[in-house]
Image (cartoon, rainbow, N blue to C red; front, side, top):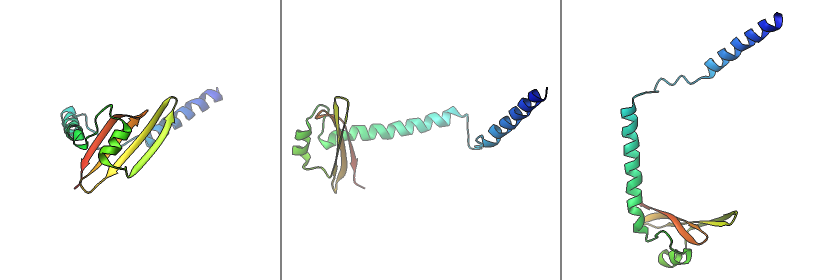
Length: 117
């Protein structure tokens, strides 16, 4: 009988601990309209960056050598391998923009262009 009481008391203590450690975020809102507005604003910003990406001149499928020929030597170059994929990240930091590109096995798969401010 006393072991049942111990388990019961331990359960209450644990439940109290979980309640005390829970988030008391008074800014939590179930207002989905406000949340969806924030998502729309964020996706609009992402789309703006995506639309500006061709300004870098790097297109999907472009070779790493062609990108370096187009933009010159990158200011940052990082490479690593995952299984059979050689991943290379290049960045060009100029007075006009920051250009970032990722290459898989020497071909461009992603690029971004951020105008200087």
